[in-house]
Image (cartoon, rainbow, N blue to C red):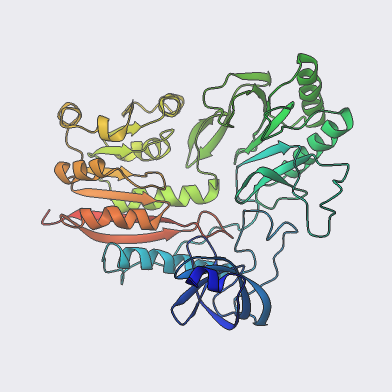
Length: 471
């Protein structure tokens, strides 16, 4: 019998949880078989049952918690354990910071073979609840049935407005109260849900692609402004008008009330037409005296308060003197580029998404920033020798790539450019470490600073300063 068959449904007793995995599961070990245990915390001792088994590891759940970890606390959200977010709510925030720092240490030390002795302590988020400025909810006619609900005779009410169940694109958890976004986010979502059900709106069928209501996006800002976007699918003009009037009349504090009709097979709205019902098609965010215009399709760091700290660290690592030419790679809406523009001679920003580049230009214009240039295109295709020759060799490169890290061609180009300093901002220490392994041939790691942007999740940002050797 193969190992995976042998361990399926098997119960392992008195398993000690010794670490936590990147996806947030506790790690236990017995002989040569590794267990990834749902909702387990380092320090727990438990009997666990395997529900998915591979050759050398299995995924398991706790069936008897023999001894709880000293880090274990009571989760504060009623949706914890079912909802896919906030997977670390049952761990004290101090412990979360400890294990996030460890994850960065492990990745940089193991993958990049970098000395991490000088790493600075992780920067905690000022708030660990209601810290997000954007949430997206999904309407569905396939509500996730909770334990104890009858699964044979479907209950009358199957419509839901909430979040996707992990691993199930077609099932939505009906959310009552979410601790991620401040008021009036919960009130808006619940009121729209109640109104839609009362008025008989059809909720979207994620498999059959039918139904009137599809998504709800709520954006807040530190300036107190509020954007609400309703995404409809197969809907009448009367239904749109009735819903949008209800929202606008009920929540007078909404700055920008928008809707989109999306009948595609996927939820992305970047290629969809946006209609403004009340107010402009944007709100404003402010950071360190700089205003950023946020539209329905704009990218902006979702933890506004901690984003300021992240950008301050990035700026301080660069150690600007005022005469530098800076390349800001993966610039997005030009947030970092505009944030540092006042400290340097010129910033050249590059980003794949054309609409983000338009946002970046607008953000420069509304702040009277004249020393920025922005270009759209695939990074490996834009950052070529002719581009460098045209704009000049940068004194500092700031790079903030997506979770997948930089394309190997981009890393190779950085090695050719030989900028005196690179400030590498990452939301994935493992892919950052992979890139640093290449860059270390020419660069020394001078500073490392983890930053917690997303409390109660396993995610952590990390900022690294690289200095060209013998520079």
